[in-house]
Length: 454
Image 1 (cartoon, rainbow, N blue to C red):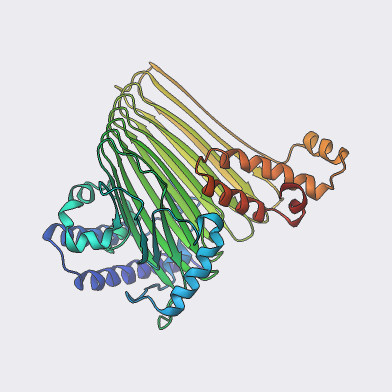
Image 2 (cartoon, rainbow, N blue to C red; image 1 turned 45 degrees about the vertical axis):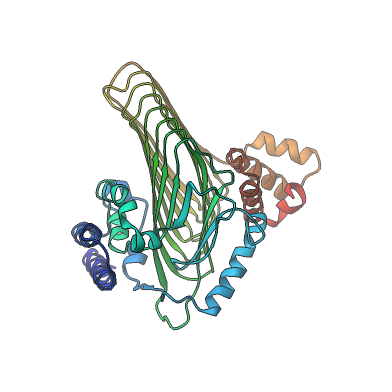
């Protein structure tokens, strides 16, 4: 396809989505500020369009498959067939699945089908954002209007704003159990086009509050498009753990944005694990705007044949005495593609900053490829910052040692690969989530791994 033809295809894709968003918003009621937010989202998306691979920030993400496909929104009434398929999908989550008694919101193609929150105290709000937008939109106006700066997929999310999860933990409270949000993508009867979902999650932790939020994206092996945005406001001395598990089907297109803002003394930990999808883009922007705040970012992505996973992170040290720690790993096999682009910014007044960033990648085949770009942008001298990146194959000495102990070459390679990925998985404290991730990492390995990692 010529450059001119690609440009025309991308422009057509933007126009189709903009028209769909306008039609969608026209059927929704709401206060003037919400109507304006949606309209501004459409206008901003039309102006920016889809990012091109000529854009440095999007050099490793090809959005042409997204632009040339016409996606549809699932009807609000979830059919019996969709519910049945959703149950089958959720059952794959093991101990985190259907039998889990903890608080949970389950969405199917963007529509809430189940809410379980009976174990939560009344002061902790765990609700469908769509319900709040219809009944009490003023409760979320301040956070939504103060959304992050222009981003094409955030603008598109604004345009379709109507669904997602809302979490608010009051001053001094701790959510007793992880709050689990499950987003399921299924085929919808009566909808010929593949489906898309635009999910907006809001998390607000007030002063001295604490919570663990788990977002799981799961889907059938069908073409779909998920555009998810999570905004988290971490109040003074609050503690947030956010875990994202991406397990969508091998044809899925997924773009996810997480925005973290930190008040004085606030701390957050982010975990991102990607095993599914054809084209996956995970972005995190953490702003340390309160003195003494801190964040830790952990990520693991695995890409095999036909998969491309692009991870972008920005940690903005905007206040003194803040600290950050980042560890991202990639495992690539077949002709899988991956990218890590991590930037740490230290502002002029952010003295006594302590920032450490590490990216490690494991290549399992001759056709796999990963690009790594760790960056430090420092505007003062009173800091302690480091970054590093390594990409390589399985260690020959370790492989020789395991083979000398009787393991076949395949089993030895599988065991070393599992050990490489499990370092990041071990950072998860929630037992059910850790068990799910260990199982998914094990299932991703070649068959030879079964006898040595099971």
